[in-house]
Structures are given as C-alpha cells and as structure tokens.
Image 1 (spheres, rainbow, N blue to C red):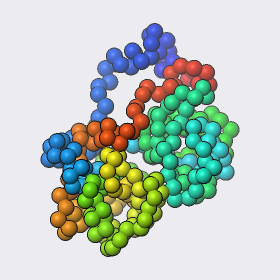
Image 2: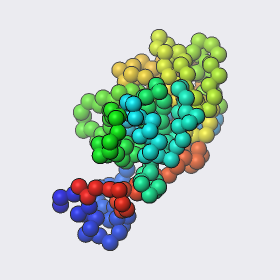
Image 3: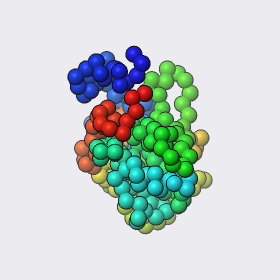
Length: 272
C-alpha cells in the first residue's frame, strides 16, 4: 500500500476503516495506569490534591519566525489580536473548509515565537502546512513518548506537571516559599520549586484549583520529589494520578473531545 489515500480508497468510509483497524486501544505512554487505585486518585482532585504527570502523552511543537503569528492565525480559528506575552490559549487548527483537526494549548513566548502542546494530529497538521506553504517559519517538533518503549530510554524537551485540588495551593505556596503570584486564568508566570524557577500556567484539567508547571526534562525527578516532600511537610494527602484516572478528568473540565481529524476528505490536501 503506497499511502493512506490509497488505503482509504479501498473502503467506503474512513471512520469505519479506522474504527475496525487492528491497531489496538489508545495507550497513555510511560505513566503507570494506577499508583494507588483509580478511585482514590480520582476522588483526590476533589478532596485533597493530585499530581498529574503530563510529560509523555502530548506533542510539543515550537513555531517561530517572521510569519509565525500569521501562519498560526491562518491554520486555526483563533484571533491573535489580544494574545500578548505570558499568555496561553486553546488553539484549534482546522482544514481549509473549517473542519476541526484537533486542539493544542498555545503559549506565546516572544512576539515571533509560539510553543504548542497537545495532540499529535494537530502537530502533524501544522508541520504539513509549514512544509507545503510559503511561510517564513521554523518548526521544531518534540513528539510524544513512545506508547511501548520496550526498555528504551525516554527523552523529552520538557517535563510537565499539574498540581490540582482544594489543597493544591497549600502545597504550591510551600514550594514557592510564600504567597504565590496572582496568575489570572490562562496566564503564565514564574514560581519557585526548590532551587529551580519554573514556569506556571493557571489552568487545570480537572476543573479544580491549581497550576500547570514545566521546565527542562533533566529536572523532572528533582521537581517531582520536591513537590511530594512539600505536600508531606504541610500535611496534604497528595495523590499521584495514573493514566486510568487521568483519562476521566476531561468529563469534569469539559475538555474538547478527540474526533477523527478532518484530514481524510476534502480539498486542500495532498494525495501523497
């Protein structure tokens, strides 16, 4: 089979073809299914606090250059007129006909530099558009971790954690050595975790108070152990959340679902 277009041509419906494929169910990479059990982990984001490890299941795509803003405005539904530095948005890329590819969180790091974190089809679509269009942009891709690494070492550009729940701010304040900066929703600032200054987004996957933090992947173990120690110091029952419970938090936060990306039919695509 030469390409996906030829494979789809053998079937009357792309959705049915993919639904009946033998590729297996979606696997959250690296993170264990459960650390205690999924029920107590799920309850903890309402009763105490949780630590979500988001390091592995999302692509990270950096887009920079003179045309970066125009390129992203062209490929997605979002307006960039009020998108200043140290902010994030929920970016929704679409086809030329306006059908949804997927979603990513987009961060503006400079006037001409954006970092997008989210689902692989969205990153692939943006790379395709950058490669086939006449845009003066540079793209750097850090793909999600392998679902089945089979003992191979895993390397990412950044670690990514969320601390959420009614007791999350007590843990974060302890880590920061005092009161946290007032970070509005979907804005970014810096906080302290041990000896590291980390970036923090006011956002949460479970509809509970908290922050998303990230930094160099080499710091991941240090950051996680420092967070866990801070929770013990303030008497918070911080639960690590496995992939089984993590996949349910979208029901509480009202997250966009993951439809079949609209890349299989319509104009504006390439057969090869």
